[in-house]
Image (cartoon, rainbow, N blue to C red; front, side):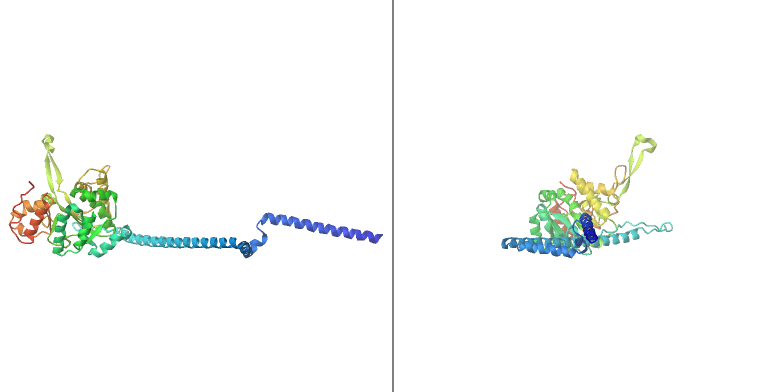
Length: 430
């Protein structure tokens, strides 16, 4: 009886241990289920999950022939799309890398310019101090117009060239213009064709030509505009030349070239321009005394006067002030009914004052006997025995409306030696 009792107690104790083990197992299972919802083995062995997923995909693919074919095509299309996206990302990375490289290069150049310009110096003895009037050139940016950059690389000499804008309305004068340029031996010149007819004509005459990309704002004026309207476009067009790092000698087509102008430039200023003046006072400036008797003792007021620069013939360097000048003039001409030459001079000469920040551009006036306007020629030079023997660099027929016949007469007088060629024309216009 005692043996039976001990056996029953042992069985009862064994059952209690099993129950406790089961309870502990259930409890641990709940804890792991809560802490590791994706499974404990998936954390320690991610490869196992990949294998399971792969096996599952194989099982799905093998479920039926039709479904297998569709699944393969889907995977192929996804692979192609991913490859294309990857190629695009690689290209984008290359472009960003190149931009960073260029930015670092420009930063390095800018730092060098700052070091040069920012170098502090002591003032020298009296009478020896001379400030710099030559601003540094901008860094060339070929991304502005890659097509134009390639043309300029072929045409320009020492990164400078003559540029003229022309449409079909000035075809006759244009022909005389480039004929004399060729005769002088100038090779670095370019015609900006404002319509297809001029572009074809220049190509037929073996004249360097550049046809701009379509632009609604410019093209409407370019194809139908007269001399003054077309003249105003140059301030927009020239900007790209300067951004590409080239100096430009802007030329109207009513000009006869008798010598190479690049042999007579100083290149020490942002803008070097011919003058509309006809003597030393009007060309280079003078002190004009204004008399106001009602002021009594202070009746005389001194003023400075100078005749304007001619916006049809000027040399402009690729500097920040030069580009700012072009932007200012182009902006005003787009909003105002104004003459481009007047706006050009106002922006170039007006000083800063309340409500207006003046342009800090350096400027030089060309020798008016070398870079001659038609008033100087017909009113003074042709009547003077000594002056008539001088050979100007160019003659700009800007003061007279009968431009073409006077241009022909200039060629006859200076090139062919016909002494009476200029006599039939009056001093002014009739």
